[in-house]
Length: 231
Image (cartoon, rainbow, N blue to C red; front, side):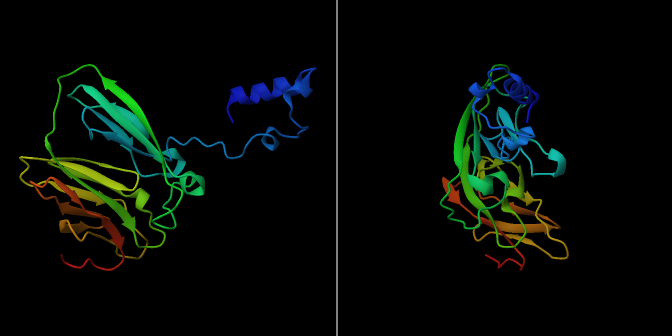
């Protein structure tokens, strides 16, 4: 509850015309204020289009005490022009807990909201290439796909509400996508894909080779507790 809201409740309760506020008698303010007032910025999934250029919207795995960053638009060193930031969050407890839906086809689809961002300094930048998209899923209890982070080389990649999206440069010589931040105590985990080649694993991080020269490719990544089957 913000200080402003608390002050307004006090002013209403102390007024000679308190009945106009249409609130019941209360002992503490929390009795009449919704317990579910939650700041959703750091619980939602954020991405941007085009990916990372000229603006990158932060999307870090959730940490204790709000130590992570989500929804902050950072202008990159070069580039100008329009960017569309996208906010996505599931309705109900799935969104408030920032967790995976119990069912992959959860009927409560994520709410999607767009935010227009314009950078006005720098040189226009283009990034020609083809697109790879896919879902990131977890087949291990207690391991959340929403916590998986992505990094990349010779491509531009980012998280989406259900997975990832990459744009691979047409002239890339060895583009890669790395997924990380998945782990479970006393258990070896593996990030697997039936489509992407590689993978090269190290602890809770796996790097996949991205193909070059395709127009569009769909490739899901699944976190498993058994070794991946070679494709």
